[in-house]
Length: 575
Image 1 (cartoon, rainbow, N blue to C red):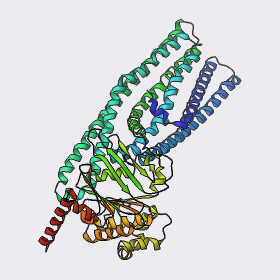
Image 2 (image 1 turned 60 degrees about the vertical axis):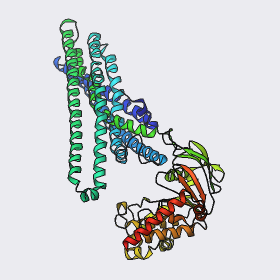
Image 3 (image 1 turned 180 degrees about the vertical axis):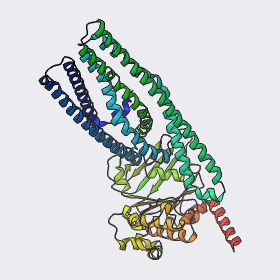
Image 4 (image 1 turned 30 degrees about the vertical axis):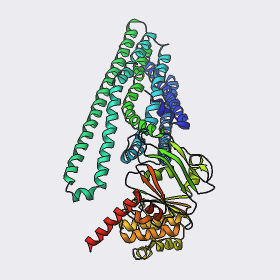
């Protein structure tokens, strides 16, 4: 009933579980003291005892109430502390793991799924750790403690009560397998609904343009209905399980009470002892009854917890601790495959010097972006090597390497912050003068000044500026970062000609002092490159300057000529 992997996630917080259980046990003894005091008081009243005789049970009752109250308050406080600490640490672990993995999804989870697990899933685990686990240990201890107390009063009643107690966990186990399946489906439907909602919001413009918003609305309704149905199944299962546990608990207590009465009538059990047994009979079952109620909440949390465990168990990227001494990059005899069957890249040899303009070109699907992911360390080669300053990339500290590296792509993210804040992320010491200098290089300074200055807020997904302005702003941010290696991965894709020209002019200027690597499908952008690598179907089919590759009359020359012909034809048609 306790998931060992989830239990291990408690770490140092495990002590709070045992403190909580100890306080709950203390509260149980206090309750027994109060019950015994009540029985003693009734017995004294029946026997018309003197007033002074009531002092002792009264004092015991007051002490028991005080201890019970204190234990209950401290138990609640400890559960709160445990829940808050676990939530904080799990969110930190989840976030840090996602950052380490440098991925958009894992184990089949989308970004919406990851967000739901990291937020709602952790909230559900709060109850799992703060309520379910302490109640589990207490529910195991309480019947044994009560048996030890009642055994000396009447062993037959105590034995029967203890024998009836396991019927509750048996009923829990009986529904647990079904419950796990239901909760797994519940989370699946929950994340699926989140995915569809996120898709609908992000693609709302396209839905309106294609007049498909009503069709998407119907899909959302269907997803919501599926989630409603699975939620109702969860509630029905919980209600049925609770009903079964109540029947077991009260039936067991009833049997114990009947035996206590029988003992007083036929076995010579004293009335005060019988009364005590009657009052504590239900206490045998209440801890496990409370545990059963927490079980359903725990199953929900455990289902989310297993997704968190799956995320946390993903192997970390292979990085070392060496510092980057030099920024010249060498790729030697590199082979890479995503599935281990078909090679996406095969026997690739490339050199990227400390300074200069190096380009990687080829048709779509030739492996350009895969090389980028290998160069930044997001992927590791199946064979061959990548060295940075004669050191294998996997031996380097990621922090040290990334402090020298900058990547500008066609979808570089601009945060929903002020323009200044976006620059400060790249260089926290950047001054306004340095920011405007970078903006001037990309021909954005006048636009920024006219739009409210550096305090202008960029909306989500940079919707309040054009695509070209977004790309130029991304370039300016990276210029302020002042790195040694700049990788431009299709940075001029889908933008206007003016912005493309500005970016490529900056690339050429930057290459005089930095190592600049440009990945581009448009060969006109790289004619000024110091060295060009031409790929076809994962194979290196040519290298050299633009003039040298054109003279070879191979695939590069054909692709360049075709693109130039298409562009000239487009210009003529436009004119």
